[in-house]
Image (cartoon, rainbow, N blue to C red; front, side, top):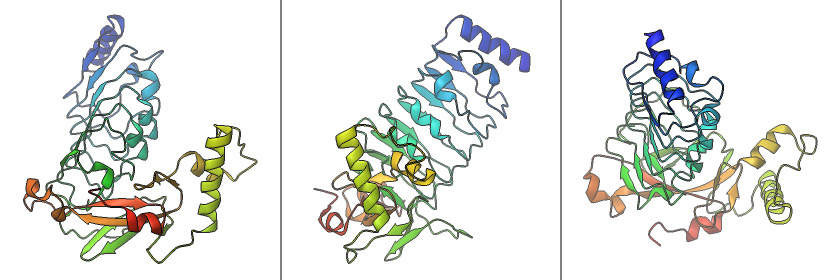
Length: 298
């Protein structure tokens, strides 16, 4: 099988194939042959369904830069590397039937992505900015029982969420969460505090991060001038990668969010799922003012 796999990949490299089928190959590791030398620069569609992959290489985008479609259905993936956000041409990503509990925010920054399939995983939350891109139109997260909140950016997209939000006991939950009525929604691990309508003053660190981010982008147009000496490493990394953007005004947020729930049953989408889901849309706002003025249907 190993020699056959090597031959298949070698032929694909030599003949500059655009499609490569590696389904049902009993793969436990991503084939190193695909990453040798310059990788497969001409490959556009990679099919790796029904294997036993547990991880993806960090240099995936560097070695397969022209991927348009990536199919990883039915593997054992528990983590998706941040580097996947560098697949600039990716339009379709299928991660259904894996072991994902969270999805890295970088997936939300794939500006060409149109189809995202995450059904039948163990998702507890989705990145706040997922769906911010207008290109993303189809998102399927069906049968993620502990997923109870969808970012409001996904409203008016084609959403598959049947079987989500069902009551489920989750032991030793370490994620920050907030509750509204009978619904509890988990928040990204980067969130340090949850704001409410009565909290009108932001934490000092959040104010400083927002002002520095604004100054760098409006005046200096670049964050790279900041050296590790100018800021602690943790703050420098946070500055480069906000946890999300306000769904009302697009202000970047770094440590605190003001979440607002819109139960799906109160939206026109309720009729599409006919009680097969208990999820709500979650707006992530940057202040009490945006929290009070944001409306899903406006």
